[in-house]
Length: 470
Image (tube, rainbow, N blue to C red; front, side, top):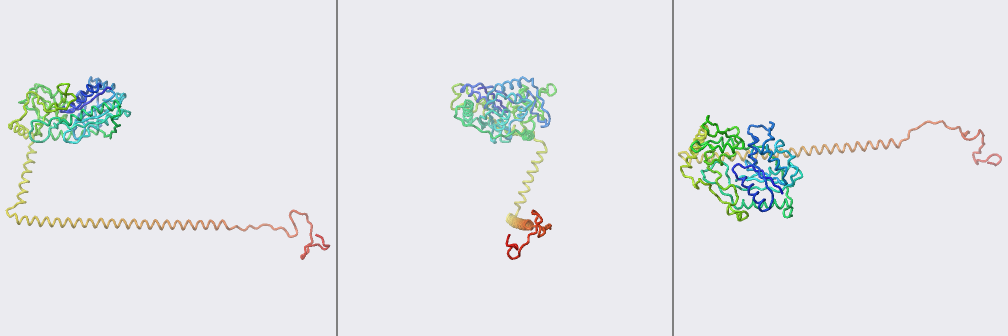
């Protein structure tokens, strides 16, 4: 079977899952697998722009080599899997643009037989795999769902937290889960009967508006000129084309455009000199683990997963000094605007004033006063609750009375209709039983309409003639 795996990876975790799936599907199950970097497609096609409205038309360059290659691979594939990192329970920004009809229309999925979704998540729950599978399934209604994979990966998102030199490594349970999912995919596509038919609960992709809020919160990444060596890796790998090298204007240092930056963290984690930092991020949680997830020797490929441990790249130490932590905190505080400082100071003043008001010089007297206020407030609350309950009961009784009145009116109307119907039927029957009188011309007593004019003398006593004859 021919597989195509499209991955949207920011810190490298989702790409690592895709590569491990590729490794198992090719070496263990002898399938043909093609990997497509979704973030590279976003960068090459210049989609996923934060400033574009949903109603704006999407302009796609059909001559892009990456797009042509992706369309060709999907058209030849029997199985398509899509994976993404999780950002606010949804896939990466630009995901919807890539799977639009302008970019990857349905005609390239005509040969699709199976589809699946996978996603990496940190501490937060993810629906990204479900959304990814739904998106691919809508391209070909006759294709069969092969499952979803949600992996607990090292949480490498730039977040608030204490300075920490290393994130958690990949757990053996997460790595085993990836291996098991590869086996499940093989079982489904080969129809060996070991895996029952899977049913997908659809969930549509509705845009990346939550990610916009995150980018506003983390603010635009900053460049540390003391560490930056102007290698340009951040500009080359930024999927949203938000980083550029200004040359002589800015001495060649990278400049981040806040209107385009989604705060995905790819530059933050990918800088070899750690010269990029997030202004509202205290932590130094960068991707310093082995995101490849591939064993060093083929014998470990389907082993116990003992190789899934932290591996520090060359040139990086396993500890961060106190001075380095303080320097990170100092740089973070300098990035906060003066208005936020003012809000912080006012908050501290408010807390101090509240403590002073609650704990004066005479605690016993103040406590009695506070207790009296609390009791009074509780009594008022109970009174209001009782009044509300009485009002609700009164309203309920009123509704019941109205219902009873309406039922009585309906019953009276029904009886009146029945009485009117009965009287109408009686009148109709009476009219039918009465025959109207019609005046007609009588026949003379001595004439018969059917006999000649013969006078027959009759004897009133015997009915016999004078001569005794009839």
